[in-house]
Image: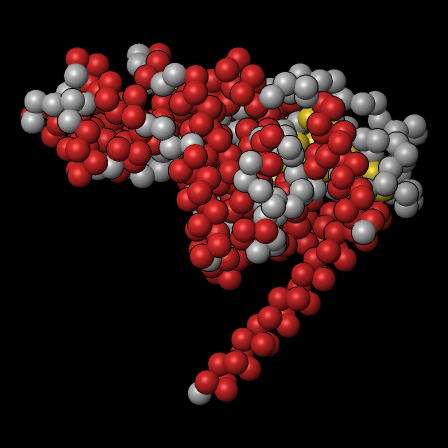
Length: 445
């Protein structure tokens, strides 16, 4: 009950931070409609001064790779093939032929670079590292230790290397270790077969379809490009091409080719917003706390959270621990943010419509390209056992569902007690579930 009350308090605070609706924010900055394809924005708010008598001495971090191309070749080439086939059939409108030319430019730019880091993505991590160094110089002074790990995906490795290079430019004396190994994937990029299966239940599929049908309005868009919608439906799918072009329109903000071509003018304000609504619901239902997917999806990051806690505890024993940096994916940052209950993102979703209208939960506040979580630790000296910390979401001070009379600072002991209890309770429940499944299997044999 205590956790529920604290989470509600955090949600109320979060609501007060922004009076603007999601629609208003998106129409002011259409890039936000890209959801996980948003470009990273530098923080705008100043940090709260260090607690009296204490100073920063350790950073623990998990960040997503920077801006990238779309991951799959087909995301570029399949829409283009449809337009070329429609052109051969003589069913493209003048705007449709213009669209085909744009798609050719975009597909050519992306050829051979699917899923790769863009130059903007590299820059983002150099800038994030630079701000980290400037904000907490005492952590990176002298021969401080920097232990960095990445998933084994090249865009994550390059993001890590750009960040480390920036830190070393500032202080060549840093003692840097960096690694990317399958050995660490159990917490750096965890998948969970059971939790994934909960997303495919009949209830989950039905609820998703009902919400999607309410916000599936592709008619104007498709008719502006093709004179024969039956052809489009048969060859590709009207809603599918509508969604595919929207995804392309949003990934362009991460790529240099956006100086030559754009696609956002193909969509009106309602279409932009409704595309985002569908994406926003998908992320919170499948990666947040939702009754439609078992109410436990964020626990996919239980191993990462335990690792963050155990590594921090080890580093707190050192005179000058420095920084632990980790580089991965939004599929880690998003559920971890929900698991932690940052800014009220641990609300249990009982209605798709409530996600935006009632809970004010917007995915672009969590996981743009380069999104990150930073734990900044403070103490007077190594003998100071009253260790405080604050957590930053995308470099902005954030709230946790924990008591604190010195916000944005929390006691590390309170953090460990609260979250280790949560994790232990889930592990016990999971152990009981597996035991029951094994007994059922034995009876069937």
